[in-house]
Image (tube, rainbow, N blue to C red; front, side, top):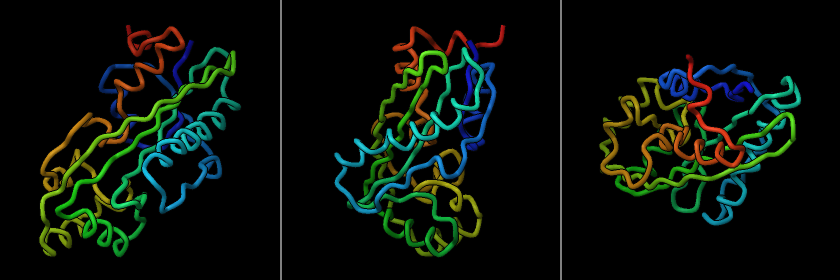
Length: 201
């Protein structure tokens, strides 16, 4: 049985590598990702999140050999009824950071595992509450200028300079990075597997 990571995220790859796991990476097609509505209630977002990660897992599973477990994940930031994805540019990043400044928000990650042999697919959603301290305009400008927020959900990376913006966290910190490994382990148990099974000997 081989482990396949259906992701283009270097952070997710690094987290599995840090555990010394043996896995391969297969990028899902961009059109495999179902877009989420920008405004919706939190409960509805939690229902929809697995559809995004499951789309990625199914896309990659179709291209993988039998006897593989495909792992996919998707992470968003949710603040005041709005989904904040990757900003893609400085203007949107600045707007997101101004919205998050001095407020609590939630980070949601959906984690999916699919068995290519049986077709069985299972998902779980992890939610972590993060509070930002009140940011000055200079802090926002300097952080945006660093380029770090541009490819990250909610416009910040807690493992980098973005960690300086955070006042408190309730829940799993690795979820805020975008890959809650404890949640992945729980989903793997449904398949009778563990991350330990994929450790390099």
